[in-house]
Length: 132
Image (cartoon, rainbow, N blue to C red):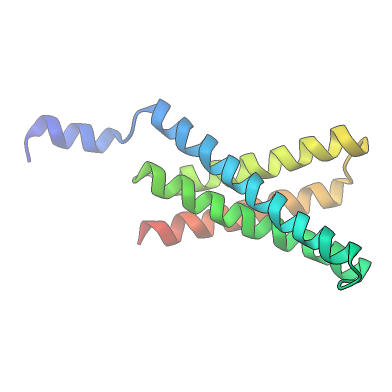
């Protein structure tokens, strides 16, 4: 490997490529979470799911959406897996917090903290799994 190529590999991907990977991973995160929440709402409306169980599925839907969004971002970038996965999961959580604030008029601090901790945890997990 030449010295120029080695130096290029040490620097990593350009910032634009990292931003594109994080944005696309965040979009995947939001889309998967929305789909899972839609399925839970349909099950709730049809009577197949109780209201308490549906409320308990929301953090799980966010976790799965953030995990898949983190995988998407890390695989899209192909290097620096952890920052891409954490960024995508954090973006997905931030979008849901923003939507909750705009639509519902606010978010409970404990629920917001729980959502952010879930996002960081599964983002780190997806980044670590993609690095292998």
